[in-house]
Amino acid sequence: MRAIGAASAALLGAAALALTAAPTALAVDPFVVSPSTVEPGGRVVLSAPGCAGTAMASSGVFDTATIPAGGSATAVVDRDARRGAVYTVSFTCAGGAPGNVDLTIAHAPTISSTAVPTVTRTATVLVPPSQGVRGGLGGSVGGWHAGELVAGTALVVAAATGAVYVVRRRAESRRH
Image (tube, rainbow, N blue to C red; front, side):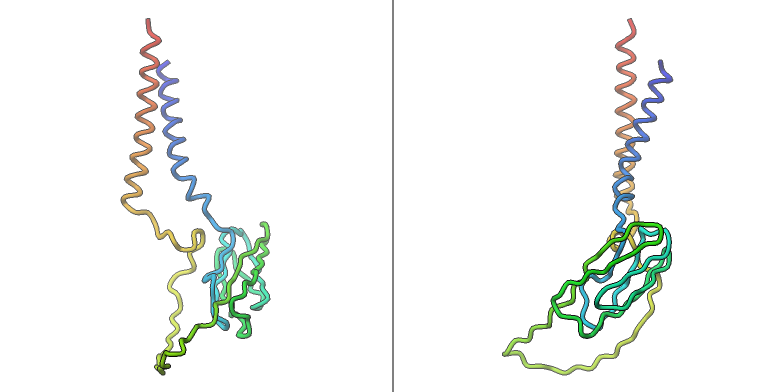
């Protein structure tokens, strides 16, 4: 009888651990366009983390781009793209399902009639990114934090302890 109780407690603990890790595994976006709003003539980074192989991305405002497996591609939005319009970016994935993502063209900047225009000169320096694009949650999750690890561990320990307590108490009440 004790072996069954220990096995039940172990299974409940494993289930609790699996349930705490499941939401992060399910949150992967299959196709990403970054940024989702861009100026005419601007650049967008296209990635397909949901594809196991090569993917293709096409839209009415840029040329078709080939995205390597596990990588990303950059596309330049046409300068004559209509401001305020929403264009569909269509993805086709080798060995996967196709999908669409919306790309918004930024509205024209508004200038107040009382504002005095000023001219400033700035130097533009293009620095290549040191890392690839973070897929999944759009780069909003940077990694594990100590508080998350402690909270997750506490939940698993609490679930396992509760399971052991209930199983042992139930086993003791059956003895006559």
